Image 1 (cartoon, rainbow, N blue to C red):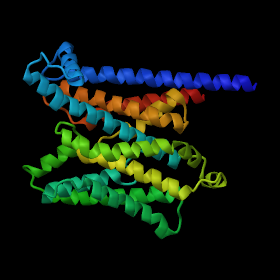
Image 2 (image 1 turned 120 degrees about the vertical axis):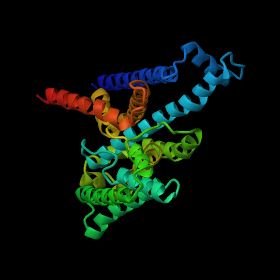
Image 3 (image 1 turned 90 degrees about the vertical axis):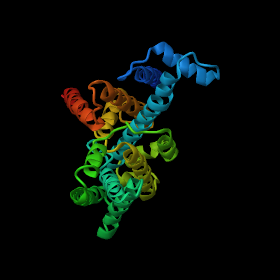
Image 4 (image 1 turned 120 degrees about the horizontal axis):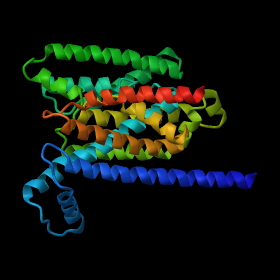
Amino acid sequence: MEALKQKAGSYSKVRDYMLLLTLWLLLFVLSVAALCLGRYGIPISDVLDVLSSKLLGKPSNVNQTIENIILNLRLPRIIASIVIGGSLALAGAAYQGIFRNPLVSPDILGVSSGAGLGAALAILFQLGTFGLQISSLAVMITSAIPKFMKNRSTIILVLGGIIVNGMMVSLLGLAKYMMDTENKLAELTYWLLGSLAKISKGDIWIISIPMVISMLLLLAIRWRVNILALGESEAKNLGVHTEFYRGLVIVLSTVLTACAVCVSGTIGWIGLIVPHLGRMLIGPDNKRLFPLSIILGGGFLLMIDTLSRIVSPAELPISILTGLVGAPFYFWILHKQRMNMT
């Protein structure tokens, strides 16, 4: 019997590795396709020539205009799509794990609305990047509510997030009311719908460092999220410092979400549906779900961003497409889960 269990465990690991390898290959194919597609189509031979010339240090045979489009416009956008999509999906999986609720998304604690308010203040008063600070303030207020209530349960924390989210949305509405309708309001509205059109290499460097650190830390403690998902009393009985690790997961997930929203605007559905898709593929174990969510989230946002560039002459905001694709997809996931339970 023990030999059968070991064999089954080995088979499961091999299957997971094969799945991850397949998804990485698909992500590479999507990335190459995204470099080729757009209002200015580029042959795949030119894309591979430019990439190989940069990797191998040899001169390229492609003209300078095409090389600039590939390296300075499309490649930073593809990298940003993968990093931001993976971050939102990982944050969603982490939140759903610690709150033990599959309906939880990364903006549950007011992160997205806080970043939106920060962007509105930055546009209104020309303050530069201000969304991360307001997002952090929103989460700090949310985290302080259970302490003030002298009830540190997860339900009170979620209710605190709803309160703070409502307050941030109201302040955002006030900021919109004060804005110039000709320029600033239109800029904020487009930003709130989500877009990677203005992403630059500098933006990638700014967000990548805190995002990669937060991702690595979440991956390192993902087995403790499994224990936190058992419940407060069970986790304490197993010797886990629940308040510390729950706070750490919230902080790391907040950093991922806030950094993403600060440069791309509000992008919905990724943190909600991608973890569900991951559970359908490999089950609820967060040790396996977290790495898979990063790849799936990055691939999903890359696909959506590529579609936003090619489906119409004017580029569509990302949140419009994530809603159009995500809502039916989420319904399909719920239908599949219902069929499995009956």
